[in-house]
Length: 140
Image 1 (cartoon, rainbow, N blue to C red):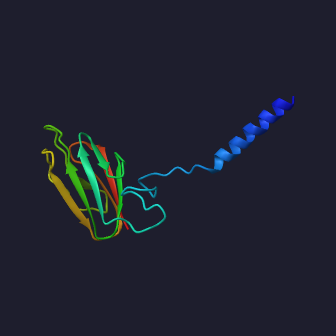
Image 2 (cartoon, rainbow, N blue to C red):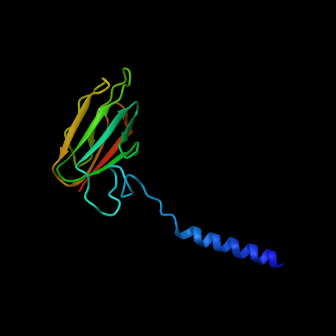
């Protein structure tokens, strides 16, 4: 009986301890590290890098479809095409807050840059693949 009571107490203590120690973070919205978050509310980075892959956008912070990046007002995002063979992709602005879209490109190593002078949330996708390839830029 004493062992059962002891085991129940240990189990309850470990469950209570486990509830307070872990706080999940997302690299896309305020986690630690990468381009997507500022950790403790520090300044947003002035640049972000996104890889245009074979049916995906991957942010430098690891977020994928949607790739989500946070940059400062006046910051620049650079999309770089990976070697995708003959598969074409683009960066197409979608939504009410927009930016100039890229041309459709195929060549690995091609780049497209946009500087964002105004705060807001900017959504994009690939004109060829639509919502299967998507991303968001949060400008603060």
